[in-house]
Amino acid sequence: MFKDITLGQYFPTDSFAHRLDPRTKLLILIMYIAAVFLVKELWVFAVLIAFMFFMTAMSNVPVSYVMRSLKPLRILLPIMFLLNLFMISTGDVLVSWKFIKITTGGLKQAVFIVLRLFALVCGASLLTLTTTPISLTEGLEKILSPLKVIKFPAHELAMMMTIALRFIPTLMEEAEKIMKAQLARGADLESGNLVKRAKAMLPILIPLFVNSFRRAEELALAMESRCYHGGEGRTRLRVLRFGWRDLIAVLVFASLIVLVILLQKYLPLDDKLFALISGAKA
Image 1 (tube, helix red, strand yellow):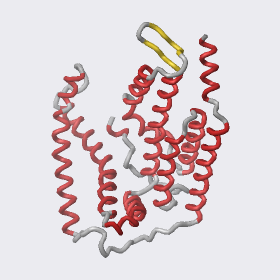
Image 2 (tube, helix red, strand yellow; image 1 turned 90 degrees about the vertical axis):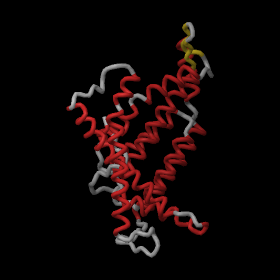
Image 3 (cartoon, one colour; image 1 turned 180 degrees about the horizontal axis):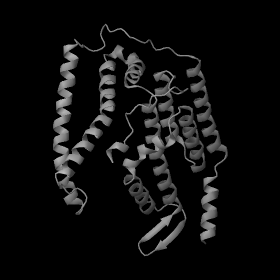
Image 4 (cartoon, helix red, strand yellow; image 1 turned 180 degrees about the vertical axis):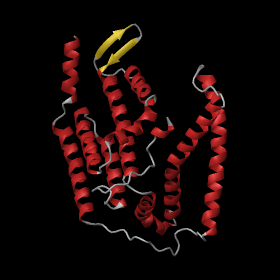
């Protein structure tokens, strides 16, 4: 289970997306997240997701590898879908049986929630798969650097976020090893109700927390022994520079956002689609 988490992992290959400036990729991710929440039409959402798969193809990262990031959500996504499906009662009634009532508004909101989570997780995973932790730190620090005029700790925040992101796959691998060790000792982690399974996770969580604190202490000692004092007076091995690839990527994605806004403004097809569904049900 833990090995399926791809967030924070880097997939080394040579592609158009890998050669982009990390600041460009962070900017595109911010615009992508904004577009995910701006979209109000399901069919327009399909255009956005198709573009995400296009970017995956441009990055030479296997689609199956990106989709692995959704496996930890295989329980959350159905729960979110069902909660929105049955709890929202706006629009026309599609199904009504005893206390169960499904409406067009609930169905649309349920699909939207699942698609948004899908798009956000895959987009974030694609960023980490195509960007090394060092480049991600540098790019994030450069983006936050204008806030230094108000004494904002841009370097420290970028370092903390990148270290946390970098240690996600490490901790997941550690948890996988601990789980296998406990199973080899006869631990039962699969049977029983939810409470028993939660209690059975204690022999995994306690060593995991101990190892996490130990790794954090070792990392702090290693940074102190190398005279690390934040970003003050530091030089860069590789200076970040925007190139023609970055300009093309930003222009293409900005054009996509404009297209998404225009499509949902002038071609609102969802209401017609759900009206057809309601008419067919009637």
